[in-house]
Length: 183
Image (tube, rainbow, N blue to C red; front, side, top):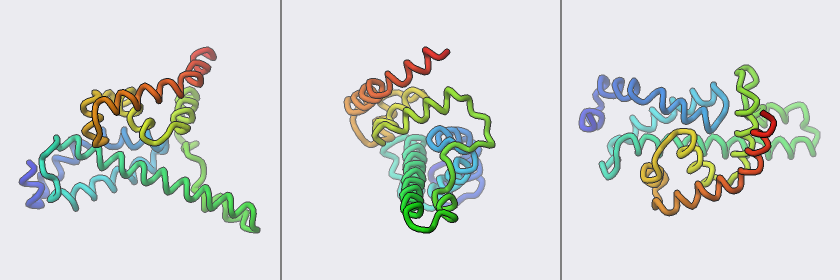
């Protein structure tokens, strides 16, 4: 299949999209919490795969390479949002209030999607974690990847992944405990 993809075989690419579209979208949604953004970033992922499949060396599984691209694109989107929010803050200081909401891109969670309030609270807690901890924790606890798979995706060691997940759990434990107490 990889050779067919490298040869730009449309049928092979369609099969790849069919095989991975749900998992790529789900991963994007878990990071971005916005259906439209998750769809847009998912499309960017498949465009990136199509454009850079020739660089895939086969040192890891194809799925690992795809998740690496997915996470990278999600993190890029989050960084873009943060830049927009900083611009928005600046706009509020200057007489730009009328455009600050547009610049900020709105809220992170899409209000048109009925996300369970607990999930929103969990997402807020996870968003306070450093990027590498959030990625490791999300892949481990929400996506169900093994530490070895996460290490491949994040291009690090299994021990580093274990440490990242442990620190993420430790930092988020108090907030998660509050959510459990509410229920």
